[in-house]
Picture 1 (tube, rainbow, N blue to C red):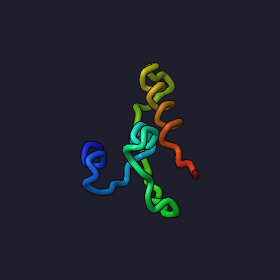
Picture 2 (cartoon, rainbow, N blue to C red):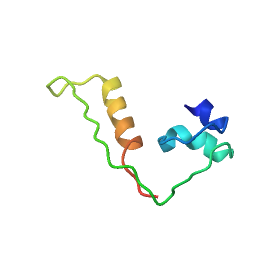
Picture 3 (tube, rainbow, N blue to C red):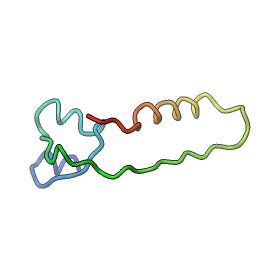
Picture 4 (cartoon, rainbow, N blue to C red):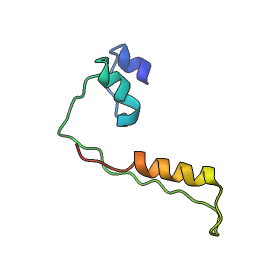
Length: 72
């Protein structure tokens, strides 16, 4: 999808963290800036218990930090 956007073929709804490099260097342009996509839910299911591998905790922390809805 990003290659199509860079080629000017169309428009897309892309998360900021994916589109950021293209926005920063001018390949992409924001349109419909007043419009907001409806919220989407993401559920992460882990095994029960308090012991959790560090890599799972790191992933949960990363997703929580980077996929939290932000208003611009």
